[in-house]
Image 1 (tube, rainbow, N blue to C red):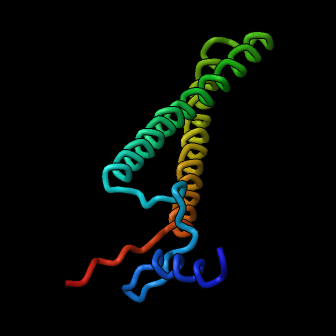
Image 2 (cartoon, rainbow, N blue to C red):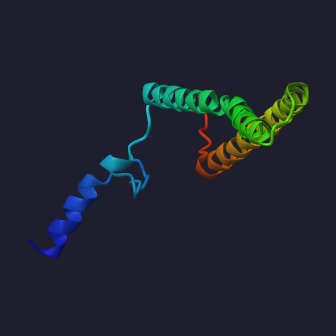
Length: 130
């Protein structure tokens, strides 16, 4: 094949609308359809809800762990029952709030990370003009 035949074939393959073919869009980079986008968004929402359910367990776990440590320590040190219960109640309440603050901080961190990902990967789609 000589040079003129190659050029005539390339000209035939190029659309005559005056637009250049988009480079970089291969079969692996196909545009996402509405159904695929909805399925992806639904899957991401389910993942966020699963993380939220796991994070909801943080305050009770921290509270009970601290309560167990304090109970065992006070039992070994032979505190009387009334003092032990008052101290244990204060420790449980205090560590519940500590766990709740930790949960809120983790929620905010995740929200900031999601916002950063949305800003990086956000593509603004324009409405077709009629």
